[in-house]
Image (cartoon, rainbow, N blue to C red):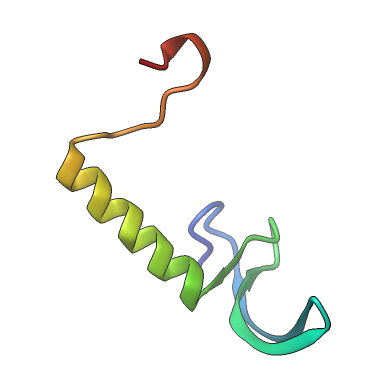
Length: 68
């Protein structure tokens, strides 16, 4: 698989995430080149944001003096 950010090599990454005393299994993809990590939760959130942009017509976020 290729990385979405840098088009580098992404490898399967299985590890344990420790949060607030409880552990959960993690499966995703990690880019060997830039370190970007993608898993099911990240993919789901990207799809939600993409659908929101289509429905609202917003193509980019505005910051600072550009904000309305």
